[in-house]
Image 1: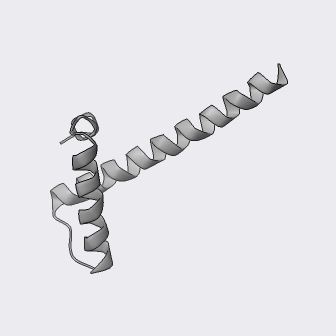
Image 2: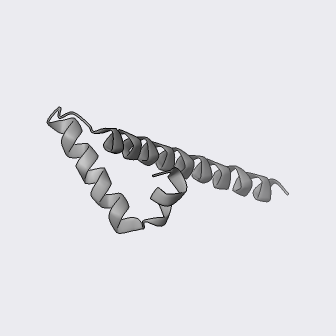
Length: 66
């Protein structure tokens, strides 16, 4: 599954995968290859969300200055 497929699965799937990854990390369980890929997609999604948040703040600063 690539990143775009992961994103199109929807919010419910995303939250289920976050809970799965969290449980596996908490109990120090091994990840399957697919779970590792999903964990990477979650991290990428969170990174993109943070970048968008920062971009929005930056754009608002420019709007105030103008």
